[in-house]
Amino acid sequence: MLAPRSATFRAPGAPQPLRRAPGMQRAAQPRVGNVPGQFFTDSTCIDCDVCRWMAPQVFTRVSGQSSVTEQPADREGRIAAMQALLSCPTVRAASASHLLPPAHPAEAAPAQFSIHMRDRDPAEFKAAQQGMPIPVAGCPGVHHCGYHSEKSFSAASYFIARESGNVMVDCPRFNPALAARLEALGGVQHIVLSHMCARRSGGVT
Ligand code: SF4
Image (cartoon, rainbow, N blue to C red; front, side, top):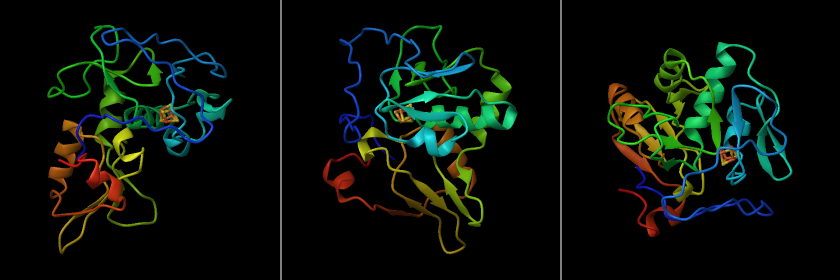
């Protein structure tokens, strides 16, 4: 899996995201286009499109970045939005205790993303997490890993369960909960990298 990010990816034409000095807290302010409710995005979005294809009913491109244009109406929608949040590649460690708490006991620090969630239901959040990797409809054994990384240019990673050895296609961002789930599914025996840059950058560990 990938080590913590060092490179920044932005889609062509995307606005420059806000940058803060080291140690400075991210201001979790809704950007333009967010409707009131539990989920919102901020101006640090790098317009990678991940949330929009993972939860298209919730996230829409507005002025070059993603916004929550419709709040999820039910549990299924909320879980999809939470999985998009966990997959947002702009994740950073955060020090403020009121921010998103560690999603797994092995995670040392709370995390912040370009997607934010108010009033988290711990049971629903756990269900969202345990639902990853996400089975791909119509493709038996194929799962979308989620947990995208800027270091792989926000590319999607897939886990394929096979009798002759499980395969991971490209690498997700390291997350202990995902690692535990993959282990429970039989572990990874082979890795296929579709992008040479991931190897050249030294991002794969
Ligand atoms: S996943 Fe995060 S960075 Fe990517 S488009 Fe959505 S909010 Fe922006």
